Length: 288
Image (cartoon, rainbow, N blue to C red):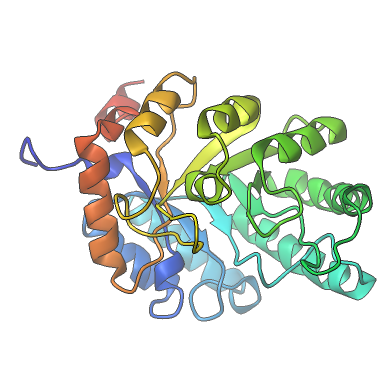
């Protein structure tokens, strides 16, 4: 690796952009060939979907990861498809079943956590926040024992389309619920889109912070674009993260037509701004 080349192993990659074009193993093989070793695997039929992965397929994936020294840190799913705080009990049952299957897959793959959204309100006539919070808590009551049995964690993400879109409302709800094992994935683009003060947001979630999603967005159209194409102030965010005890690989959640190029340009831009220092290198990890 030349002095000017970024250390790709200091960044994790979310596989969102590859869900419709690659199987999970093909996608991870492609990304590992460019130097990435840690991933957030998106759940999507044809890519990686719990119902499509029987015991033998799961064992093959574990062997693939071990053979190639790769790590699936977290599992995620397109949260617009499910709603664990839906008004209708049938939708809640369906959504909890999907999330439960993802949690069980995370356990089989040795993933640290499963990213979930707290639920979505009707934008035209939303239910009261206290009512939706009660449904969210009831969902956690059902999902936490599943995560404990699977040996993984629930990780709640700040999402603009959910009824707890910002760091304070999300953290306040989790504090009331009280399970310290529930973590948070803080999405920088999501925070930027709703014009949240990212410094205040990171401080608010710091106690539960597990991972950080990295992409760019403007304020008018919700995006997860390559770094440097939107409004996120990445140099400032880097300094904020360096001031926290959090030392995990940032997860690039770039959703772009040319994902390879978008990921590469994002890593190069972040490296120039000092983001390589946020997470240890592989050699540093091995020496710990």
